[in-house]
Amino acid sequence: MTGQYLTPCHCAAGYGRRTMTTRLHSVVFDAADPSALARFWAVATGWPITYEQPDEVVVEPPEDDTGAPTEPGLPLVFGLVDDPKIGKNRVHLDLNSRSGDEQREIVERLLAHGATPADIGQEDVGWVVLADPEGNELCVLYPRDDYVAAGAVAAIVLDTPDPGALAPFWTEAAGWVVVGGDDSYASLARPDGAGPRLELIRVSEPKVVKNRVHLDVAPYAADDQAADVSRLRDLGATPADVGQGEQTWVVLADPHGNEFCVLSPRD
Image 1 (spheres, rainbow, N blue to C red):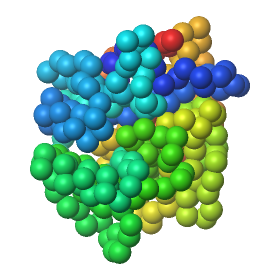
Image 2 (tube, rainbow, N blue to C red; image 1 turned 90 degrees about the vertical axis):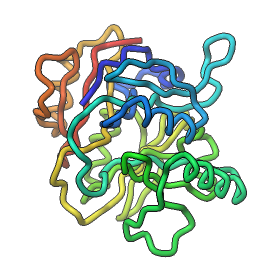
Image 3 (cartoon, rainbow, N blue to C red; image 1 turned 180 degrees about the horizontal axis):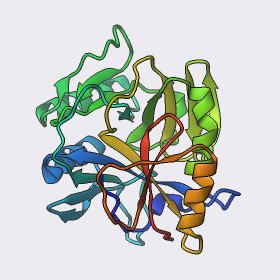
């Protein structure tokens, strides 16, 4: 598990301060080859690699000449991990499309860059399920009005046995708000509506191994990391040991066991 990425979260601009003091900062992938996996996701999103070291690589939305992002989105961080992938991931990304032709083009482009078709029991659906070169599942969605305000990444999808029960925790941890849902899912979005959704999806399969893809949240620069960790524990998070040792981030698990990191404070 990583969490060293220290570049300020550009997508936090416009959130507006609320009662919570952490906000969703990045999506982190365990990777046997961070550079190769990051290159695939740069192709998948059309985003550049902005930071690269042997053990950590970052892909994030492009910026204009003023340094402002040209589309909303969260950084994707790829950290070196030796553990093999076991079973279907409980966190995956959905890629956006604006037309049926674009959906087909994205699928063809990803297959040409090492993706493979994936069968997770989806049957006849309007989206296409693939796996990236390290086996991480992803979906290429058909055009949907829900994701008009998103960029290349339409949604971050988190499996859970009870979306309604988990949603209040993630509204506090991510700083996002519930914008839709029923018994099978809960959909969270930034307060300004921009960027990807965080979709909590009901599944029956139990969590049995450490998540290979996880979320990082971060306090604001003037806030206190220890206080936020305590707040999140009061909301049902528990300490998690994934072999991280002494680090500047704190590893917790949400009330349904999904690991996430609380980073050090930042702008």
